Length: 381
Image (cartoon, rainbow, N blue to C red; front, side, top):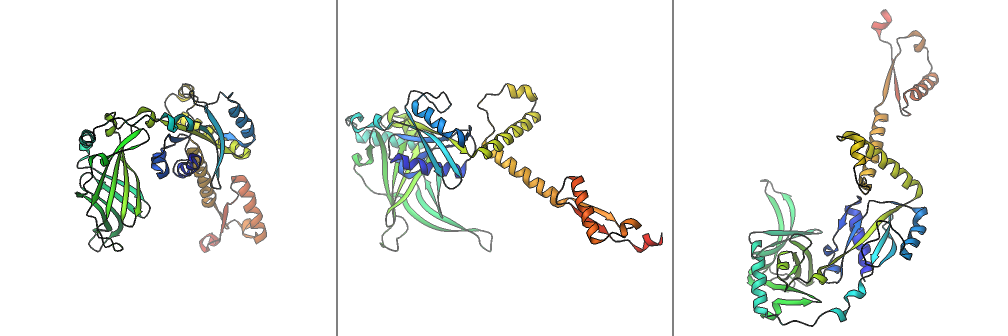
């Protein structure tokens, strides 16, 4: 299942970060939130030429590679993925499915649900007066702690300059539904999380009932508070998952093994000609960057070997250079005065030959040559 997830995550990572060191946390992908183990994708700065791909796959399959993809004592499997029509990736997939099988999940421990709920709410108390947002396509979702959950879409300013919005309240904290304490603390595998159901939202046109939302608070030690997922599970009934490191302060909500995140490391595979060009552009850009920094070559020598110029920066720099060159060619122009009697006798064909010769001399194939007509003042002289 998670092989399919990786393709989705890679699609996100390439679309948003084609740089050499981008990281995408798949907790932002809905299918992975309730899965264990968890993974994060890292796009490496090292590039790979297409002709070297079979050799690299063979090395990684045999386990004898000493490249940067080899990591810790986890067993990795190489996998070549195609992302869209443009990118190909060689990825190292950690073989950890068997390490978290059902046999390894411990028996349910005796936890007083009343104590767990009270402790969890105390840990979340610093979130008061804070709101979190989540862009879910056309709608933006907003969670304000112990206040409300809403979805809205900005329409732009009205005649008075005030921003207009379409808004639906999905639930109010003041209208939260009564749950038994043992329903407020739930468990997925090795991890526990808090849950609350807020009602009293905007009236639903289809059910003629107020909207409601079930909010799950999960321990996540790998980042700040964030809305990890929002889904309409039934008509006008929603589910929201909030990841927060605050719950991790209590072992009831934090299990080291369950919270481990395994790296999936990938590198771009380029056609040989494109690889050679990108590497040349990267070297030129790095030289340019080094010359602009204090210390010059000495500073470059002190850098780590892994400190490569990101692929996106190379491509952007190359595109910028091409754009400047095209603009230079487009703007290049020479004005030839026809006051010279010899030039004044040039035919149209001769003028084009002269333009081509001047274009070669100026190294500007698109050079424009304007032959200015002689003025009466010049003729009188």
